[in-house]
Image (cartoon, rainbow, N blue to C red; front, side):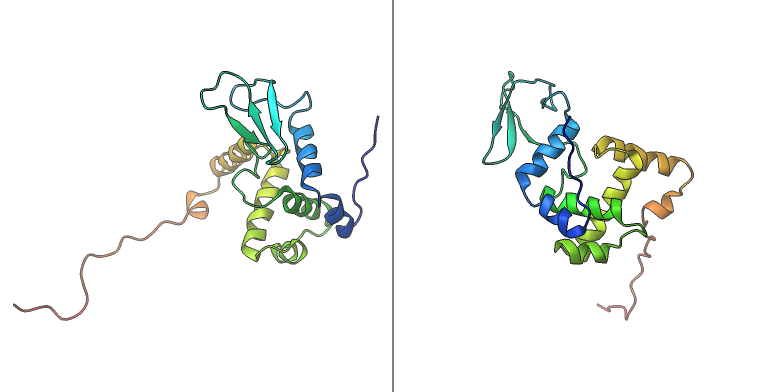
Length: 171
């Protein structure tokens, strides 16, 4: 049984997660412990395209489905690499007093708005115990159904009056 050296400091974490191939291997091993399978059909017969870090399903799909390790996770809709995501997740998990989006912004070199988005997605994933997108979405729905009012989750616009202000036109 091999032991994985867990980074002890932020500098170690940045070095540890710097290689995108290493991050892809970590996430793939976490998601598919019995080997990578197509998320669309579950087929284990895949071809890995190393240059693009994606798999191609060899099943009878008409358009030969391709997918990355990010598909179906909280990382899916993000243009950021796994190196930044894993470093931010390490920060959220290891900071005793919590971490602000501003700290993440300074540490990994993204905008504060992006860091805030990452921070919230990572915290939701940690509440559900997995990085799977379905679990995070169901947790969000559960929180909404368990008493959080919809007004706090979504902002609604007030209806505007149809009357115009100003002088009337005379013809």
